[in-house]
Length: 346
Image (cartoon, rainbow, N blue to C red; front, side, top):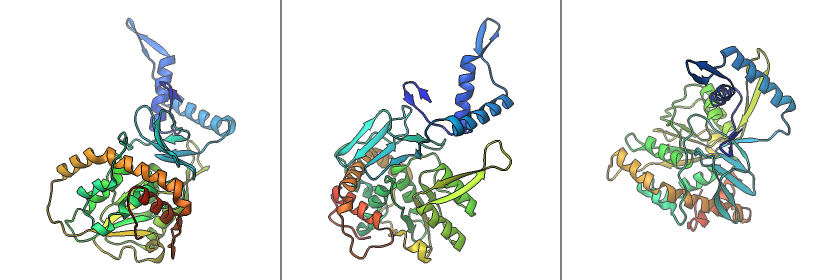
């Protein structure tokens, strides 16, 4: 829909679409109360009938179908990142560079929990994150490597497993990593069953889970399918038996005390393991959050430079003894080199 000279996209049946539909109805239909004309409110049944009718029309007569994306879209030639601002601006990344544009070249959808990214600043350095994250020096490069892949719409996604003893800042570190690339109102979840994973995948671009102490085989298998692509079905809106299927592929980060959470073969071959070291000097959460807010635009700008490098040189990278996620290794190494890292060990 066209709103204030920019396009916005909503799922029919979503809260945002329902709110827009109510507003449009009120704009076109007014009722006189006293001396004033005020927007008329549609009835609940009328609203449901309208959404069912629009859904049917879109499926049968809505023109050429187009793929929709959440936060990140594109292909092997270009990447689009939804800034999440009120103007629906986007970052366009190619092998030649990056820029902010008023309208994305792909169709984005948003969820109520999404928050905007900052306006990126050129000339930044992703190493600024070292000041707010408890990670060993030799492992740090794996953090921006994972972040680069979060912004890559192509390929499978590796997990990050942050593990170590209690009181070492694992939860805060995971939340900071997610905030840099995909800010939202919700923090890490504590899923209890497989359905929780599918709901989270349906409504978030990145997925973060807190304080895993044990992981069942079914849970592990579902996580692996989410990282490489999983299809699930739900009852279609306003029908009794028709199924609506959706396919998702999501980046995932989680933490826990045990170091053997990812021992299962499929999960282990897809996981970046970060063991947090002992904290030498403790700082308050508010102080760390303030510092992250200050460096965030510069870090984002540096990551965008890395994406340019990944698109430009990823295909040229030769990986000796490649792991399961070779596409990730090639893209991340090219991107990390563009950000100033001489080498990184996956």
